[in-house]
Length: 231
Image 1 (cartoon, one colour):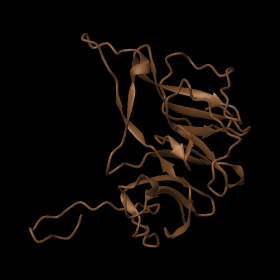
Image 2 (cartoon, rainbow, N blue to C red; image 1 turned 90 degrees about the horizontal axis):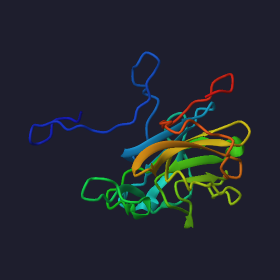
Image 3 (cartoon, helix red, strand yellow; image 1 turned 90 degrees about the vertical axis):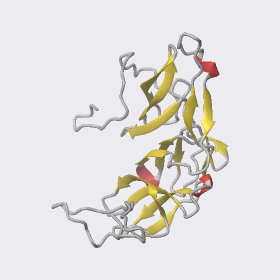
């Protein structure tokens, strides 16, 4: 909470802190002051102390200013990937008839987000060799069509060898890499006139692994791999 202002009121102030094991704030961690804190998403903490976040540079109304940023153990910026995420979509209009029933899925209209955009990078999973698997509500990455899921090389460039087949999963929001190069991808789709959560397993090249057939009504938004290989 901020100090009292001229009108005598206090305001809430958004902060990013690191807590010690006993719950106290760690004074050695300081988030970069020039990053837009309100819509910052935390994604990964590495064994070497680095932290991966997605955050806006100061002008948060420009979608190209949403960046993946590596922070050091002290919270200060180490590296900003040059990757450009654009054409954000989060608001969906689903047309209905007079009875309230949804019309066919090909009439669903995704609406690009306007000014004051939220952070639409939902999940980032580090892979071997410094690569990253990124899921979110973006449509283009570095100017190329990459609707919702992209694998980045260690320099932040999209991996041209990875072409995810998301025809049945329209809006991915999480991914779980598997040791053999495949990945579970979670998101939302429209089936029988309604929204539902779903999960696909993609091969290392991004094609759908048809051997993976979860129960038809499986509803999940993420997973963790267990020691015995199940999830």
